[in-house]
Amino acid sequence: MRFARYFACGLVLPVLAGCTTTGPVPGTPEFTAARVSRGYDCGVRIDRGRVIARLAPADRGRFIAANASFAVKSYKAPRLCDASERDAVQRELASLAKR
Image (cartoon, rainbow, N blue to C red):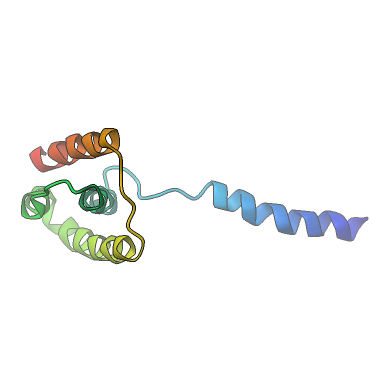
């Protein structure tokens, strides 16, 4: 009985850990890179130079590294978006470029 309990916990805990995994934290360069990458997926025109210029100089390297990582993932498994998601991403990217 004890073994069955430990075995069940061994199966359940990794699943629960996967449920708590989230994407990049909002406000970080990695989050900005994720949104820019999603914009590319949706076909939104993005002024990447303007987005980078708005970042703090210390965060620019993190953004560029994260953006390259997301670009590779996006290239391997592109996912189209519908019109409402495209509009939402476009608004969010416009606000990132204005900061």
